[in-house]
Structures are given as C-alpha cells and as structure tokens.
Image 1 (cartoon, rainbow, N blue to C red):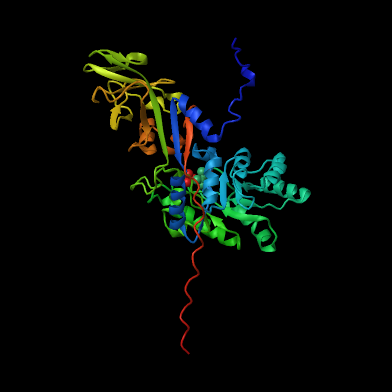
Image 2: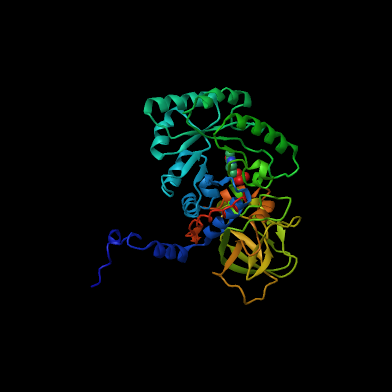
Length: 412
Ligand SMILES: *Cc1c(COP(=O)(O)O)cnc(C)c1O
C-alpha cells in the first residue's frame, strides 16, 4: 500500500536552487515583472558620463523604486558605483548586505536620538537637516567613538528637508577647525525637470554660495533631472534615482534613458459579448459591436491603477496582446482587467497567454499619464504579487582609464 508522504517532510524549496525556485514561482505566477539590471547599469553609466568629473551615486530608496534595492545596489556596485542613498535605516540595512563595506550609504531621512547604534552597526551615514539633530548626532559620536561621518542637508527653496542657509553658516567655523565628521554637503532641487523654471537658478546660486564655505567637503545638488540642467548643477556627486529606472528625467524632451522593467500578466478567460452588453463594475463600458474580451490577471491591487479604467466617455490605458495594442474595457478591478481584443485574429490568443502591461512600447511614463500620476509612483506601486525575474547585473567596473598621455616636453 502506498503511504502518502508526510507533507512536513517535503522540503519547501529548501533544496531547490534559486533558479529552480524561480522556475517554480514562474510556473504558477499570474504576473511576471522582469527587471533588466543591465539596463539599469547602462543608465547609470550614461549618467556618470554626463556628469563626469562628478561622481555618480545611485538612489535606491523605496526598494530601488520598486525594482529591488539589493539587486539594484549589487549590480550598480559591481559596475563601480560607490555611494548609495536610501530613505530609511531599514533600507540601508538591505543595501549594506548587498554592497562592499567600503561603499557609502546615506540615509536621507536623517537621525533620531535612539538610532545611533543602528547607524554604527550598519555603517551608514545620516543626512542631517536640523541643528538639534546635528547636536544629537554629535553626542552619539562623542559617547560611542563612532566616526562614520554624516551629510549636511541645506534647504535652498524646496522647504521639505534641510536646515536654512543661515543655520548652515553657523557650522562653517567647525568645518574650518578640521576633524568635523561632515562627509557631504547637499541640497535638493524642487523643479529640476522643468528646464526653464527660474527656481533652478535661484537654488543653484544659493547652494553654490553656502557649499563654497564648506571647504574640502564634497557637494551634491543634482537628482536625475538636475544632471541635465548643465555642468554647473553637478558639483562633486550627483544623485540620480528615477533615470536609473528608465523614467524620463527630461520630460520636455525625448527620454535619453533605456527602459528597465517589463510587466506581463496572464489571460484567465476570454469571452464573447453582444453589441450593447456592458463590461465590469458599474457597467460603465458598452460594446458597440460584437466584442471579444480578454480578462487579464492584474488589477489595482497590483499597482495597475483604477484611474486607467475605460468607460463610454473616456479611453483608458492600453495593453499589448499578441504584438498589438488593445484598449482596456470598463473599470479596472482589484485583481482583474478586461481588454477588448476584437481586432485580433481569433486564433492568436488563448486562455493562459501573456499580455504586456509595460514594455513593447508601453513605457512607465505613458502608464503614469493614464494613472494620473508620475512614473515614480507607477514604479513604487508595482505589485507584490508579481513573480520577479532579474536579467543581467553581472557587469563589472570599466577598467580605469589609461593615464593621460604625457604632455610633449616643452622645448627649452
Ligand atoms: C529621491 C531623491 C533623489 C533622487 O531623485 P530622482 O528625481 O529620482 O532622480 C535625490 N536626492 C534626494 C534628496 C531625494 O530625496
């Protein structure tokens, strides 16, 4: 007699290789998000080249803009990135596990009195934007002997984080006294994606003045868009985030970055409906002809925003089915989205086939337009239910450039 094995004795993936685990996840997944780490590295290299001689850091907050902070940080580190920015200590912990001890990790959210030990343990640096915060950090460093360094964040017009320019001037004597523990002075641009916004020049002037007083301390102003405002915005370190992940940092011009994510979801049912039938919650979309509908396994719980729904008055987002763009039909629901596939040949799609929600020409920025938001929110909302697949990421640092040719000896 056959005895069923005790389910507890079956290894739950423990004996499977990462590849086999991934294959198992893929076999049952209803959505697959592919992150192209090589494209992220290529984007980083492009930004680095644009900003040279400034150092190019990598902003990997919010789980690497939804792409996976550890995977992204490891790939960037392999490619030569030496400085990372995150929002929280928990994010810093994840990134630290993925990068060498020599890599600098800055925590944009700054320092609270009880977090000093965590900073020391992880070996990361707070971005300090308030004089009381700085005083507390100094107390921690004096008591613990920790000398890992910190950044000073100066507000130059955004009025979010950072101390005032006047407050920052008060730190200058300390800089001149030496051994100050400040490893970076930074500010953040409020409108960098708008080339001609006068706030950019105002912030640049204010930052240039105050940063020049922090002599010997590296300075940083530019996010992704700031890099494209010109060399004077680049200072010593640039801090790109969105552009690494393929979001257009220059929305007034063509996107210079490569796309990074591709999102596919499975068709769970195909149905034929009559002219006059409605589709989905509220019956807001009416078939104007005999119509074929594919029901796709992704919805607003997966970060496919309900705002991209389609009804009789407005067209919503599109998805690519069998190589062709097809419109959404009706309201996007929590787990499912209906798509009008009437214009496709009847035999090209079947239940179980995959449709493309991002990729094949559908960009994150296009989707953001339909969602009524920006690419950043599309990326950081990408659902937890998707199986995640990583491509590449093994690129190594480019060999150091050969030394410049000896200048011809001056003839004497
Ligand atoms: C998020 C963030 C960045 C990166 O901005 P992007 O627009 O995504 O390039 C840089 N600096 C600070 C302070 C940030 O908060």
